[in-house]
Image (tube, rainbow, N blue to C red; front, top):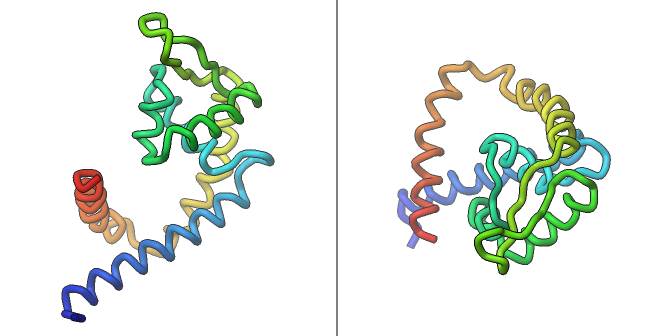
Length: 147
């Protein structure tokens, strides 16, 4: 049954999905050569939190499988952007930290994406952007609860 509430939900998620796809496409075009969006996301997270994380913690943070995160981390390690070491407390686990080269790559990527993000919002009043943030955060929280 297509109630007004269902139509509103479909319209909202259609807009979010369309925006997500367009943002990903634009980001992919401006990221430094060879850097994928998943690489940038992990490097940015590690730089922001400033602590080591296990691959399982990173997989949970990004809502991907451990296998997908292992693949991303392998590529980042090969590029010299992260250091992966055994967990000294549990030899079955590993710990991941951003390397100095990873920090430089993340900073270069931030320099490339920041103007893109700013230009996307140039013609939307700041108060309008701020007004939508609580709704998006609440929606994200609800999605995280339902996992």
